[in-house]
Length: 207
Image (cartoon, rainbow, N blue to C red; front, top):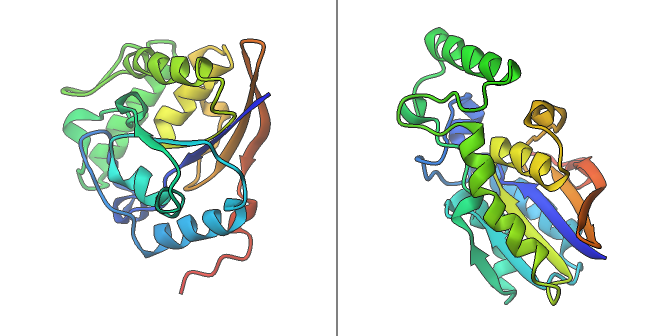
């Protein structure tokens, strides 16, 4: 069985402020994010990863930088980028913004997966572009153990795609910073081996 460790990136300053980033904001990890990344590395550094995949956005590869620096092969896949939130990316966490997001999430809950903000993507758009990373994971048997770092909303969509679940179930996947979903791939099918694991964050003190 192929093992795939899918994690969300560490915290950024915009995460901390509750400001949406999306595909168009290429922010760095903050001190907390770097501490989370270090905690993940210390917990999983002895896993014999064959390959690392990240999105094109630096918060993902900063999260797994120590693995990359150890000499592991690394490939960026733009399909793993976060959903583009269009005009709302980087905007203050105001009541107007919260209302706009509530309305968008309600549209998705009601089954309108093509709904999107001006200049942004829908979850259906993200679902379609994630088919390329899924194909990569499905067709490289020599990569037996893989580490993949991506983004919260895109990760929820990706898990629906991998598990052949409807997008209506994407809210079933919690996604705090650096949370792990360990997946197995065998006989053409993906399964969850570990769900929403954050054991590496136990006892983490941000000072």
